[in-house]
Length: 218
Image 1 (cartoon, rainbow, N blue to C red):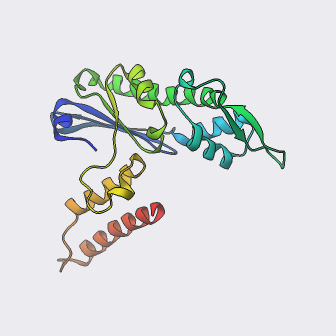
Image 2: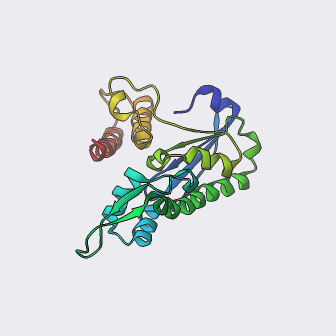
Image 3: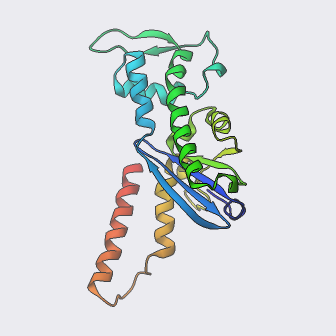
């Protein structure tokens, strides 16, 4: 997801998930700061549900299929079908209305991360800019919006260095799961005899957690 050159030059990785937004700062090849904000894609879905008066499940589907980050980029004539609540029939809405509900929340998430980065005093060291990942990073035009908020170059990041599963996990959605797997591969003790029962128990515990993660995705 991040290259060695980016980590050396200085970069922020921002993972916008469903319930939280996590960010890490790298400088001169080393991790310098981490942070977590209790806001993410689920808040965007709730805004859509309330604004378009549609069930939360329908709002999530509409977000994934028709969502975007900048309303001005959406044709005013484009229409989408919005399911009704409580058995009411579906109705047609402008797609731009949907994006107008999404854009302020996405801007808020990005602005909160930007404020946290400012507090670290390291924003001037982010020569490689920002990498966005996580499910929300797939929202069209989010890199353009983020560039304005951070005033830095922005790209969308997906897992790197994966062999054999590229067609499945080559997406920002799987960044965390793939990262955990690679971390375990590089840091867990190799399978084989262990010195103590506690060591074996700890290794199995971590492996089981990673398997559970992957099961949820696949």
